[in-house]
Amino acid sequence: MDSVALWMEDEEIIEERITRRCIRNEFNIMELSQKSFIQNFRLSKEAFDYVLRGITEELTVPIRSTAINPAIKLAATLKFLGQGGYQHQIGQDRFAGLAQSTTSKCIAEVLNAIEKTMCPKHIKFEMNSQEKRDAKNYFYSKFGLPGIIGAVDGTHIQMVRPVKDEHLFFNRKLKHSVNAMVICDHNMYIRAVNGVYGGAAHDAHVWSLSKERQYMLSNYQNGDKSSWLIGDSGYPLEPWLLTPYRNAEENSLESLYNEKFTKARSIIERVFGILKSRFRCLLAGRELHYAPKKVVKILNVCCALHNICLIYNVEAPTVIETNEERSSFALPNGDQNEFSRIAQTIRDRIKISLRS
Image 1 (cartoon, helix red, strand yellow):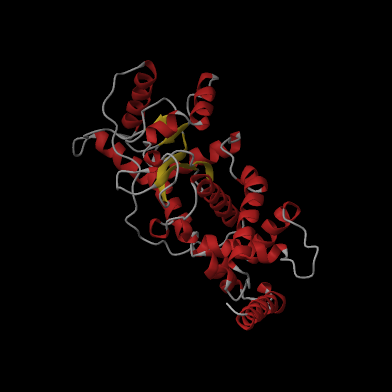
Image 2 (cartoon, helix red, strand yellow; image 1 turned 45 degrees about the vertical axis):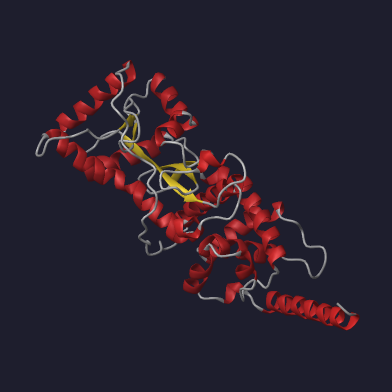
């Protein structure tokens, strides 16, 4: 390449930088209407401002006049999470004006900041007495099922083939994913998320090794014997985790229990629908082009932002219907241990109470 061509290439790069800088400097995203703001960034202006104030100290402080300010970094990251597009497309957006490499750095920086500051604050499994009462009252008044404080289920977050331990992420639909365990309460608030296991792992395996199961077990052993999560047949029946009956006969009490149980448990499915429709990077059709650790980080951040949207009453998006990989299938009937026998007695008592 001769010197003239090099000079022309340098001129084009400089012009692109100037154009991007003008986009960043001239457009104020807060001038958007609330509706347009939510469509673009998934958060309301108030929620955006809350997150921005919470993470600013964790972001690199602009020193040069050409440095990217925190609001633009957050906007670019939210645009990526909401659309699930490529970083180059996000950077070229009229609200960002960033090069692909800069977009990548901004997204990584903001994800780290939100995971550090927002996730611990907004994703907490522990519930106080009032929160438990509210949850139990909701499920009992709506479905006639006592003692329920939340629902658990797994969902697959699709990703490209990982370089390391590929077999751990290869799921039953011959795709690569992480199997994310999510627990929500009656308000569709995400109380726990665990995405550290690959798509090859069964829901029961993820649950058995989770700190949430250990917490429920500890509470049970310390005297709380009337608080239960609900899960589908992919989970074990335990004194703190109720599941449906197998092969219930039509018009039987078991069938009635299963009907009410299914309606109550559908809340976690609605959470998945809203979460993935709001943050479309999590949809199966938008597989994430990152290593597993970053996929988990993205998942954690999206769950925290989902909860923040609930706090700020951000209107839920229209749920996108998808044929995504389900993580669960029925567990085989195993040996009855002490806990499963106790759990069966609890479930039978609830079933009998439905007769009245």
